[in-house]
Image 1: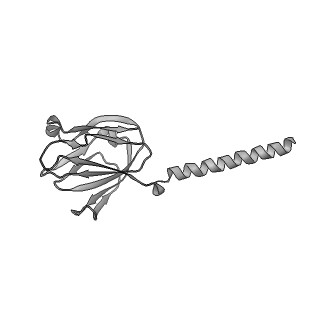
Image 2: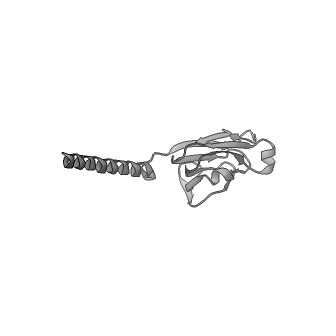
Image 3: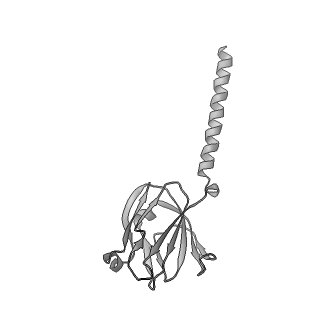
Length: 154
């Protein structure tokens, strides 16, 4: 009976390992993950110097598309060193005026983005580290005028 019991337990263990291995691979395959979409506006048509919303929330391991829009008459920056150090950037997609057609894709690490008036881009990334970063800002003059924000990664 011991040999039968040992064979059963061995089969059960191998089956469990195979199942957990396939689940791990499925969870980590970003090509199969539906991206979460989040939007932020830099300033607005009224010319107010602010991020809207001024608090952004993300989740580690979740493929995210952050749509950054600048509907103002002036270029603004979007940058947070803490955030940049806590995400894996898949790509940036620069969109045409119709906001549907891509004009360019940029690959590699991103620290700060300057977005010109009336333009939109998509930042595709996966947060890889948790933290709260209160260093979201544009230029020093805009930050002094209140254009700052917080990014929270759980």
